[in-house]
Image (cartoon, rainbow, N blue to C red; front, side, top):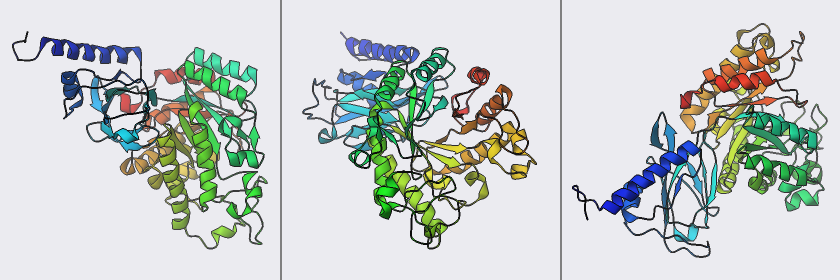
Amino acid sequence: MFSHDGWPTAAIFRLLTLISIVILAFIAGASLRVVGAEDPGVAESQLGAASGSESTALTSAAAFSRNLTGRVYVWDQGRLRPAAQARVSTGSALVRTDSSGRFEFAPEQRTGNLSIVQPGYDVVRRPIYYDQSVVVLRDLVVRAIYIPFGLVTEPAVQAWAHDLVDRNLINAVVVDIKDEAGQVFSIAATSTVEQIGASRDGRSVAAFLTELQAKGVYRIGRVVTFLDGTYPRWYTDNALHNFAGGLFIDSMGSTWSSAYKLEARTYNIEIGVAAADYVEEIQYDYVRLPYENGLRERLDRTEADRVAAITQFAQEASEALHLAGVAVSFDTFGVVSTAGNDQGIGQSVEGLAQHLDYISPMVYPSGWHAGSLGFAYPPAHPGPVVKINVQATVDLARPHGTALVRPWLQDFHDYQARGLRYHSEQVHAQIAATAEAGGIGFMLWDPSLKYEELALEQALTLTWSPFS
């Protein structure tokens, strides 16, 4: 039997059912809303499929004979909108969606797995054995705290973090995977990490991150990159050097790997890839050159050389980590966004925005010298300082890529001359300023873990511009 407009009744019913599933799945908060439109008519109407062939569901990734095609959507102001330029990976191939949200993989590129990364939305990682799929992404505004390497293994700290999640004060955590000393948790230990003795027992961290995943927490793995107290001592050719040719030692007494060396860059990328099963995002910190004097490499390298090295690392990390199905972010100096140059460290927001999902300027008000940004004492103006710097970073990033700005904010007392106390009022002022300036989410920094809970609660009332 046919309806008046000539469509088979069964096809209409299936189409309405599919639409209902999309709506219900959106309400339920699922990331992968619809997978495998099995009716050709539905597939054509939903995906614009040209072939009209019946979609096939396989039970194994061992063999695929047809292309995998699909579309990615986001929910935007009450309507489904195509997700353009989303990064879609099968683990063996990486593509970006077109302006209609469409992606396609050849049979030999299929693995039975699919991941999707789009800035501002949850990362999707699912098995997929159908030939066609529709994916609707869920908005993501990160509300995160940082837990350092030396504390994340403690049961009391893990229980405390679970409590913050259970009370909806946070929906994300930043956990060290590799720290400033070059130590790496075993969940991300590569053969080189093992060889140089940098691996540390990460079994409790793996369990903690798995528990957080079950609660829907967005997990960010922090990898301290070129600042490294271990790797440069083993591979001195891949290290930075002083004028005498020895290892460069910074003001903290630490050595540095060289961003100019492919081997040093690859070492840190491989650590990020190894951690991919436990996190949704890898965040590289100290992804720069040191700013101190006494660096031999500064004599024969220009600003263009420095920027090229850090931007090259961003490109290499983006390719490897997006293929592995995780988002990528870099921590940057806030001053780079306003100074008009790289400040001697190689960071360029414009260059990084082409490759990353998130740029995270460290905009701590106490990090600004007297007179900066027009303020005699910047720590006394936490909201305006953050707003100026986040806005400047957004303005630099937006024309050059899809990267969003999600800053690090100060949740510790001022360490400059006046020693101002930072409580919920000062922390909330920074969070609100981030939202006003076009940032998406925030991360609070306090290695002592004395986070202002009232500020976290107040953050729930804010509106973030892309999702208003």
